[in-house]
Figure 1 (cartoon, helix red, strand yellow):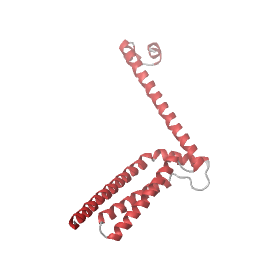
Figure 2 (spheres, rainbow, N blue to C red; figure 1 turned 90 degrees about the vertical axis):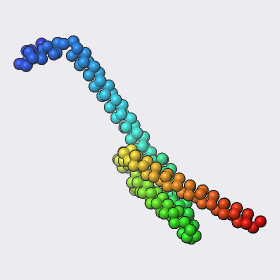
Figure 3 (cartoon, one colour; figure 1 turned 90 degrees about the horizontal axis):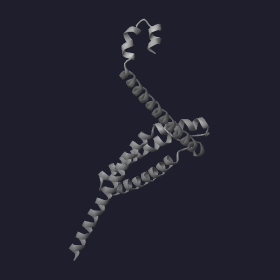
Figure 4 (spheres, rainbow, N blue to C red; figure 1 turned 60 degrees about the vertical axis):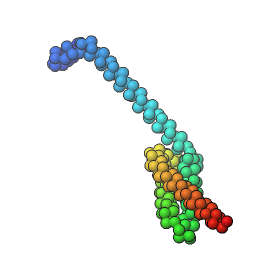
Length: 182
């Protein structure tokens, strides 16, 4: 390489001491091996991403949606039903505005999740390119879906805690009534 630069480049005289230095060639070899390792890592990431897309495309093509999204939708619909029943009972007794607000917020987040999942379904004729687009959209919106799920889980936990505390207070008040009777 040094000879090539001497014959083809007028600035080669200035580079000759640097290029002929053995530590430079070692550094160059280390940098080239790091670049090769980075390239291999990128290729592996691309293959992994492509295999996820192909797998999800097959699921979407066969059923119109991903199996995990169908499960999430089923659980979310059930949570909405339970939350509406709780909200109705809270409204009828006029005793717990906090429970009403929790139920409303839970339903809002659940509907947000159902809307996001609905965008990932193939509506109408199920073509291969539609399936590919929906599978790609599913992979890219996974974090968004998980974030909404986490919020919904928080509301579910809060509703459960609220109900348990309500049952406890009810049991205490019933026990007090029984004690007063005897």
